[in-house]
Length: 297
Figure 1 (tube, rainbow, N blue to C red):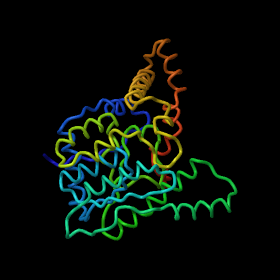
Figure 2 (figure 1 turned 90 degrees about the vertical axis):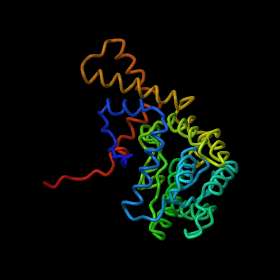
Figure 3 (figure 1 turned 135 degrees about the vertical axis):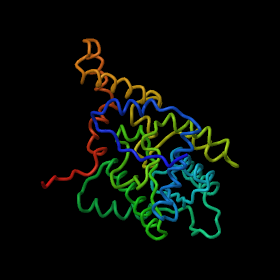
Figure 4 (figure 1 turned 30 degrees about the horizontal axis):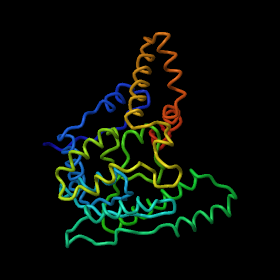
């Protein structure tokens, strides 16, 4: 198999592009493509390993298990911070222990680190300056504390920070700019439902699938203490529902751009645009478009 090509994130009005990604199917070949992409990126850039923040959720657990199964070097870290539930921490530690590198020649560090004192000191300083805060603002500080740690580790070992976000988070803006992102994003354009299916396939390759299975069964959270679950924040009952909402929305937007919407479709489009996930999509366009750069010519 040749090395997988890199792909740009679709433009906001590329409705066909978004629909193609949402229609992606799970297969063993896709699992192989992800692994090959990760291995080739390290080799091509002369890097030692990936640096992975392990939360106890399925995204980081899946990547840790995949790199373990395919012998791709990585260093996992469980970065505990105020708001993490004990069960999240326990799952993260189990994932680090089961799937972390056992190569005696590789750098060795403790997996578990408590960043609460760092977060508390920054939060207190900012409170003294601004005299106000919000749960989202505090969550952003936590995410950025964790990323400081991961990038520092990458610099010290000539590694690369791995991003764990997937398509559902991309579409809903469900991440912190300059926070819980990395330099390489193998899951960014893969729907969450497909990721779960890939994880099921991967379990058959593992000598110890238990930690990955526990993460797959867990309630998804952002680990920032903002709400009881990601789905609660997004206003949906499942990732399948979220993806179906976007499929319908992008289909209607595509037809609208072609001036082929019927009256009933226009009413449905207006109704969809009132849903939380579509509002989040429209409000977070700036995050997907990246840095705004002036053309000086």
